Image (cartoon, rainbow, N blue to C red; front, side, top):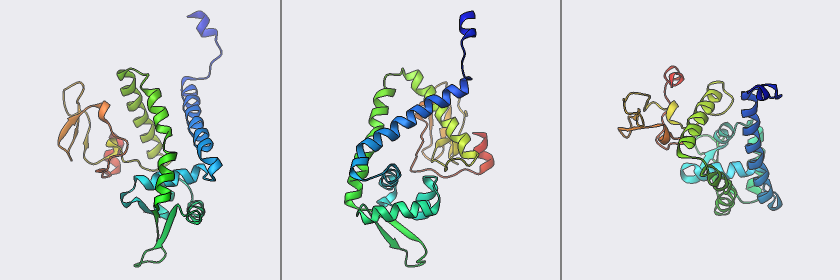
Length: 210
């Protein structure tokens, strides 16, 4: 123990940040290697991947900017470039021509599907963890994302812990302590969702308690 104490180390939070940064860098590098030669940059890939996850594979420019945490002019420029490559199609809303909806084309859907392959690499890596380690990691990530959301650093994700249907620690069962009011089922940390299609934002005061 004495020898460990003498080791020069960054603080534990700093080392955790370094580890997360390395994973993020690996993801960006892999995306760039796979798509860079095709002329599709990392931010363009994010737009395509996001549109693939949207209902009808479409979203407004302002929504895309908010979800990807970029400024509106930046999002508009990226979308303009994607439109020139025929990966997306832009349409003005009839009710208000100032609002532009971006639709994913068949070519864009294919490009977005190819670019989303990096989760498979992470999935293979996380499978090397024990079930207990996976649950602990998921719980920690949910808390970390929630803190960043409350600080306004990242857009609100459709997570259980910020949903109006989520009731935390209402059951005595050790592995199914929470309750989803939408589906009316108990569940545990291992079933926490990060992007639920049935999500409904909880009032801020209530969400902060989660």
